[in-house]
Length: 139
Image (cartoon, rainbow, N blue to C red; front, side):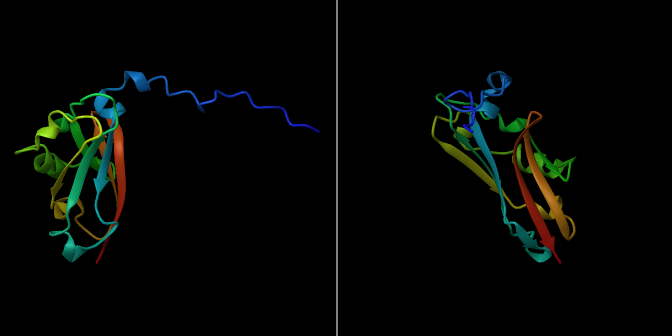
């Protein structure tokens, strides 16, 4: 018996209908939260947490970094807000050209990961989840 052919668009599934309505910082930027997956309690003070954005779109995008929030196991992190949303920033955080990446690093894991255990770090931009990372803190 011959299988029936599938009828699909040649490019795959149709795009999410809300995708075009999303702001450029969500639609065109690829956000990352970079940190080691396993960290000893004693190493938290010196282990960096990095955020980065890469513009994968066709035009300059304003990352609007002040709209970023970090959730740690579902709870907002005021320490992240203070560390990353204040102070001097690279000019690319204001206007990121196509194909370029901008990054920033802070050492604030003692405030984010207070005890041994499993943590889920979720980066949101104005309520849109844009990145995530699991981290284990060992004694």
